[in-house]
Image (cartoon, rainbow, N blue to C red; front, side, top):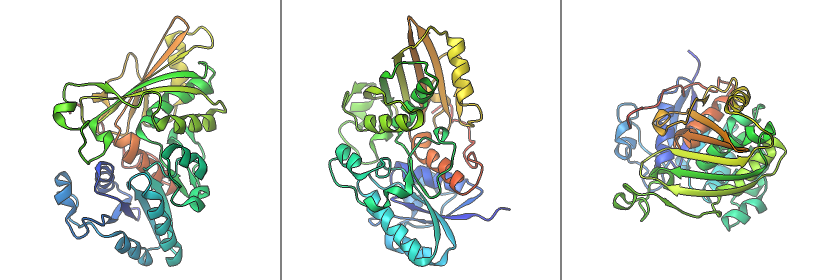
Amino acid sequence: MTKRTPCIVLGATGYVGGELLRLIAGHAALELQAATSDRQAGGAIADQFPHLASHIDSNFVSTDDAMATLAGLESAAVFSAAPHGAAAATIAATLDAAEAAGTAVHVVDASADFRYADADAYAAVYGHAHGAPERLPQFVSAVPEHLAETPAQHVGHPGCFATAMQLAIVPLLKHGLAEPNLVATGITGATGSGKVPTATTHLPERHANLFAYKPLSHRHAPEVVAHVAAATGTTPALHFVPHSGPFARGIHMTVVAPATAACNEASLHDAFAGYYAGAPFIRVVDGMPRLKSVVGSNFAQLGLATANDTVCVTVVIDNLVKGAAGGAVQWMNRLLGLDEATGLMQSAAGWT
């Protein structure tokens, strides 16, 4: 059996942290070393995540205690599920501790803190200084399917909305199928807003309801533009309107753009299927995909349509898996030299 790599999950008490713990528990090549929570240190992980009780019987530890464990390890995989703005400093301290201990580590961050190439670009979107600008050159950020070469050190995984949009946009522009003037409408489940309840995630407000928020000003838009430009060489104009949907998890994204030339659905399908050939988690389907086909899995399904010189791409993903924890594990598999699908081939739950 392959030796399992010890894992540390930073900021492990939220939805993304819980999904990381679930995926690590079922991963043949990863082994949980520590899950951090400074507020809940000493508390049982199973008390926070009862659905993991049959697989995880350890407790949360403080960040300092997790860093101390690095001294006894030759190597480690570090996942960060800490919030935007807090993750960078914690990751920098962890890297400092690993370097002092002589421990080889790879980091995959699920927050926004390492998705931008420079501190000024990050500050322009988030309104505060970056927490560890000296570490930015060590990170690469991209959807796994859009970067053939595995980075040498660390990854900032794109956000959930951003992942869905890029899966649609990059093939369109890479193949010159659409003008770089894109309209995107995305609907996300309540888990996309985090674990702390808010007025817009409270069940009476969310149930049987649908509403837009931050139209044309969502923070993921500049992230997507930068990543698409890096992947295709074309900087698009992106008009994004996000919505909150009446379900717990999943993202349904529709991207519409003017076609560059006459095309039909068959040729569009062939272009996308060719682009994602060999990508184990991408399915280009006939007709339009549905959320229940992917929720609980790391798979994405794409549906295509065209009419009157317009192309339309619809994408469904699980925001907590492909859009966060699953994508992070996919990247870590590559960083560790494993097949990227290791531990991630579970099918969708179906009847959620």
